[in-house]
Amino acid sequence: MTLRLDDTGFFNKDIGKGNIKIYQDSDIFCYGVDAVILADFAAGRKSFNRILDLGTGNGVIPLILSHKTSASYIVGIEVQEKSYGLAVKNAEFNELSHRVQFVLGNVNDANSGMQALRDESFDAVTCNPPYFTNGASVVSKNPEVAIARQEVLAGLEDFLLYGKRKLRDKGEFFLIHRPERLVDILSLGRQFGLEAREIRLVANKAAEKPKMVLVRMIKGGGRNLTILEPLIIHKDDGSYTDEILKIYERI
Image 1 (tube, rainbow, N blue to C red):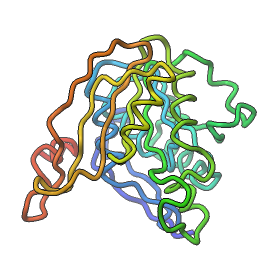
Image 2: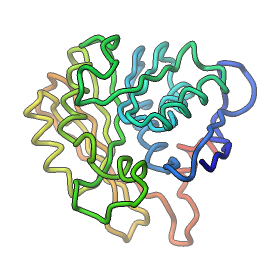
Image 3: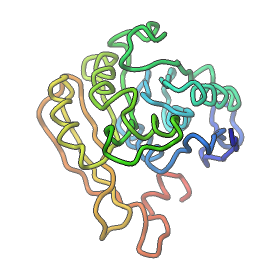
């Protein structure tokens, strides 16, 4: 284990001092801009009281949501024991355990210790799942990295179906994924009663092909899809765009 402590840059409003910090294991997986923009995408909609994060890793999305929202209960589900342990450690280190909690379990296994999470009890679900199907990319020799990157233990269908079960009627599902999976996301979402309401492509630079897509879905929502302006991460000189700096709250 190669443990490091990183500063997220987001103020810890619960204790009224300092920024939220996060322990990460660089041998497993460290969070990137995708987690930050997903948290911001979800936080910018409306007030949610109960939020569920699927595939939470070291807990970065719930931790950021504790800063960006007024939710009283944010819970993350993680299948890997080491990452789950880091998530719990991060909540405790930042004195956020009264709002942010974590559960060890698999979204496709109803008997994996998650029975306490009642169906139809959450206002919003966030999900930054493994992007690649099995065989779609080179499999890491590190099994923990492979599970984080590829659909080894759970696939897109499992995350969508589990999230739909936990959402109340008209609850909102926020997902970040790769654009090439968009047809799967929309078709499976509709099949499960999650109707896409907003789509936003994410590109590294304005002239480059989008590499990610943000999707907002409503459980039992109407068929009224809006395509938002693309989100550009970097300027041509490689520095962050103003919108990304605002998301990171640096301006």
